Length: 109
Image (cartoon, rainbow, N blue to C red; front, side, top):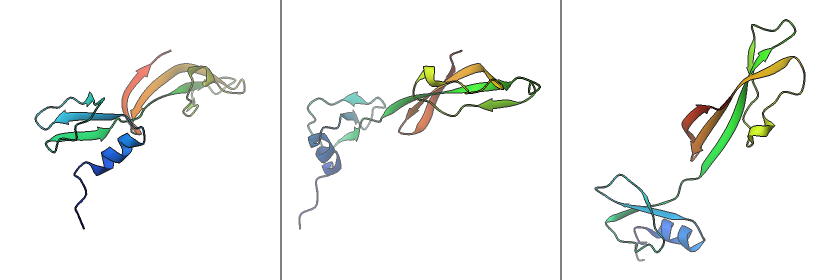
């Protein structure tokens, strides 16, 4: 049986519509591969998925001033809220994930 091509996994992903990136072994930056050549001395990968999520930092009201709480992650900034009047949003945090790993955190409110 023949040994599979070194980049067989990425060739199949590209054929199925995945966006492929490449870099040469001596370089650090990944670039978009519109028409990959599948060179044996080039590194390839499926472009990592980037996801942005938001969560709110809450402060208690009605005697709960010393307590903090968070809302959990939400896909949309407008979804960050708490359904009752016991908590108010005091900050909103935007977290960017690449392949489910947080890579950037920013306070947006």
